[in-house]
Image (cartoon, rainbow, N blue to C red; front, side):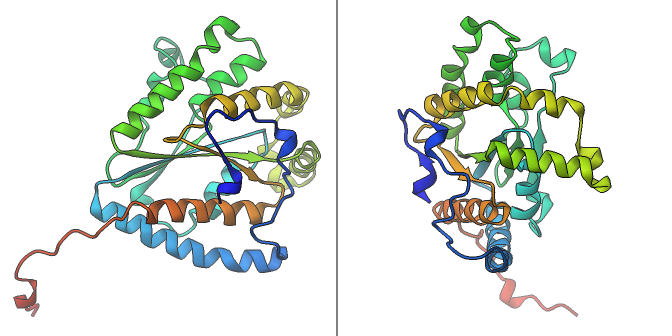
Length: 267
């Protein structure tokens, strides 16, 4: 999976990352979909082990262009996983209370505790993305935030949190198709807002902001992966496997059983 991992101190150009790539699974969509249930089952077992051990923490960050597939990734990658040990935090427009604090204040309270997996659907990175593209805060202010974020994530890692960050890389043409589907299919209308069209006009500016994010904040302790995401089935397979490999690498163990269980008789 390292072919999609952004190494530290790398200058990223998204033009070099093909959103149609499927070199890890050069198979058909139908065959690809058949592989996912086994990965779901394996992830479910690893999540149960993580929850039982109660020592490790996993933070997963998802960022993408509008309609990039964040919701779909969560739904399909974590299908069947016990929600008791998994939570999703979505970060929308800050409230008045949140704006009265520093921009990381609302983030910190959502990070995972021992035995938990937390998925950020959007994240603290909005504060170097939308605020940059729409000039919500001056460059002098948002340009310092890359270092703030790196330090914040280093603190989390030092305290025992494993961090995986996924940029779901779709093409502009693919975004157009997905937005059109939301408009054309009645059961998807609820997903569509006129603001989606307005944001699409900023595609190039968002691309520059994402490239800066990937270049400046992919670190050894909190790496970014640029996931080809035009094919939803391929996206799901790759992200599932990266999470599974990461959890396996934690060498987790079930807690020891209570002494004397072999003598217990249930009548």
